Length: 439
Image 1 (cartoon, rainbow, N blue to C red):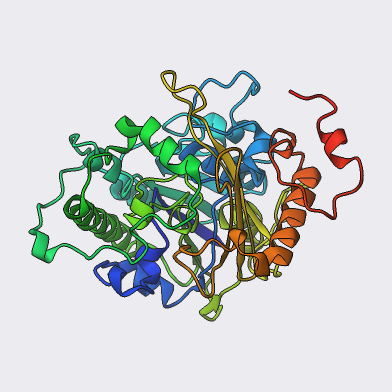
Image 2 (image 1 turned 30 degrees about the vertical axis):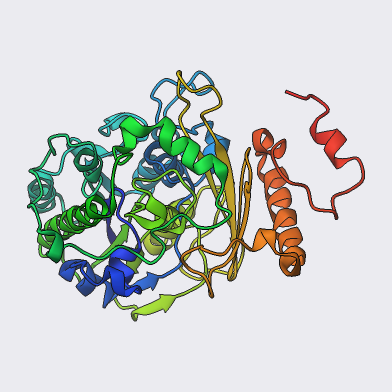
């Protein structure tokens, strides 16, 4: 089975799902036609809402903390090699299985562009201009007797970051829109009662990165218009690529590394554990298989490697943190995050974890007032009612605390163990065990 994996950076799940009437402005005709012949995962999550940790996880099938990659920094003292260099990484694993592997566009796990050391033939560097042409040229020249894995990794709509900072945009600026024609603000635009103190602290600490510190409602509506235009722009490029793929013999997978706040909670970009930041679009088209919908939470970014292995009909590497998602079982999904520190703001560098299980979502950050959040996503998809401050939901809060404790111990998330709120069911002496070495 030939496979094309298409990625678009910072492409939010709500831009495709459009379940809210405030998202009706998004236009993705080419991804819509791919979705019509695919299995669409409506509750797909990243492993970490930031480029390098998420993409490293994607290429290895391991949690970011297991890789020691918890930021976008290139030089990490506790890691001697890049995640794509291992024999069990995506490119090397498929090459060993007899696949012709090529990579075009944004790598960012950790360097900007892929190299041959990552297990792929690099056919186009980081950058959307010329990416589709490089892919179609490679497809036309390759030996048809060997199966292939082609990764086409687009940068857009990530360039909304430059827009927010009033910087030149790499592939052309967006078209100015009159306020009357701009999209409405989402219902969860205002800050929610009992939101985590750490979120606004980090937003202020990284004001130069986010670029939205002085935004008013009008600015946010223009932001949403710009983001939607970038989504349409990358959809157009994806359509050009889809037109060059042989659908009868090629599986096509579409995914993003993370989402974008897109004005929800007054937030843009990523890193926060809001739904808009951690949910990703994920669809899998396999020739001969019927289209369908999977509506249970799945670790899409973490599970892409074993899923592609099943599509290809090859064994997956041993010891992965997730299995194939083609026949997923209902289970907890855990998302990690860590904000970059700020030299002029001691304390900046908040970390957090979120657990999603069935309709429940439990989030905990490592410091601050209201650092625990509990939401019923079926009743409150916009995360506006923090149930962690309501006694009637204490039993659910305790269950979710227990799930995160179990996961942290099982996966070796030692660093965050010291920041957990332990459930009352924790074994006697658990806190003493965790703090045996205090720091």
